[in-house]
Length: 181
Image (cartoon, rainbow, N blue to C red; front, side, top):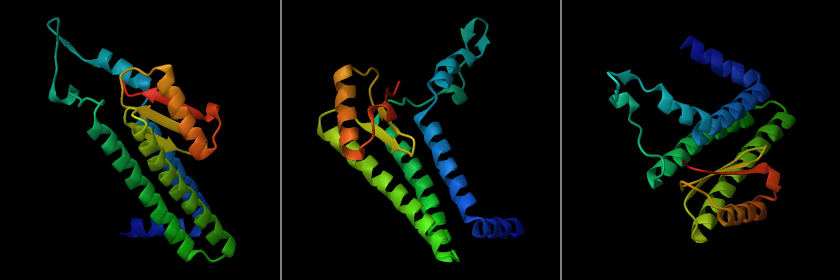
């Protein structure tokens, strides 16, 4: 209980640092959720061999990623993490002693809420165009889109990029579109 109070005291006294740590946590979660293709490709090499055959345990079984529930889980996890950050920013905003601190916390919270709204809008527009379901993550540095398909073609990527540019005013070099495989 004492450690918990120390954490809240630290957050209260260091609102900017806490907000920065929270944003870093969101970015890290985003990276983990969208995945590191290299680690997924080398994971198959890590399966132990037994008498020349592949030994498969329940720990090695992974649900297929290329389905609707996978994207729903990704969205739910990201929304949950972001809601925690928004809650922290709201607390920081409410307990801020100076107007500048309140303003900064409010701006960060509004920016995060805007990103969340834009992501849902983009995902809906992509689906309405008849394109595969997508998982969109917007950060300060860019937009990452994971498309629920094994192989992307150029027309699909172009349509997705056009939607993102129109909705976010981001440049093409700030957009990453990848397939789910």
